[in-house]
Length: 228
Ligand code: URA
Image 1 (cartoon, rainbow, N blue to C red):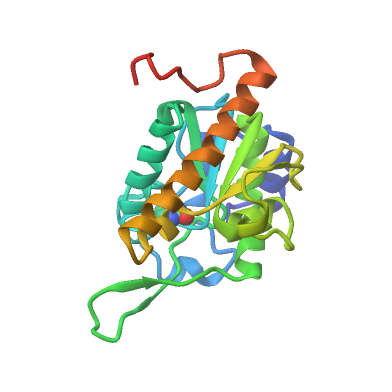
Image 2: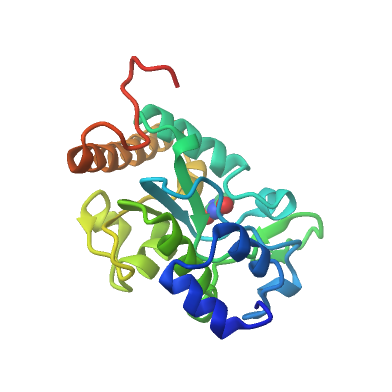
């Protein structure tokens, strides 16, 4: 954590801590053990004032190495889905509920296999997310997958049943839970993959409509005929 974790936590919650300061402080976070195996902290990316915040679970292998969220295969799929939904990723703040990669070594010894973060790890990382939320003040949050949706909307949230509906979130901003892009990548057949991708895009379109309804057209979204 930072030198003065309590002071930082309070400042983060009030929205007083600038994103760059939070990012710098998060680099030395030891609030849970995940920092021990991770290459680096992967903080959120995007501008303060973004109207849409997209929140995933935790950085993957590529993100851990690059230090940026959603830059690997799941990130490419997310880009495609945002594009198909008419949302410009450059105008979205993208982050994760957990900011270190949790993994175990594959039996072959080569690959690093993703492991789901537990509740204590999600909780330990929460001040960073609160700081991001307080500073960016998005009008809407999209939670990718169960870990993010349960952290933001509530532990009973089930993506299969409740995806695509606008719900109150525990941090005050309305949120929509949807499928994680990694789940789309894991689909067993092309048909299943297409159906899951279409579902993700449909939920992102709901997010876009929600933003446009709340504040006309100026919301980090674009019309199909506008340049990407
Ligand atoms: N999956 C996530 O949830 N977040 C990332 O940043 C990358 C993959």
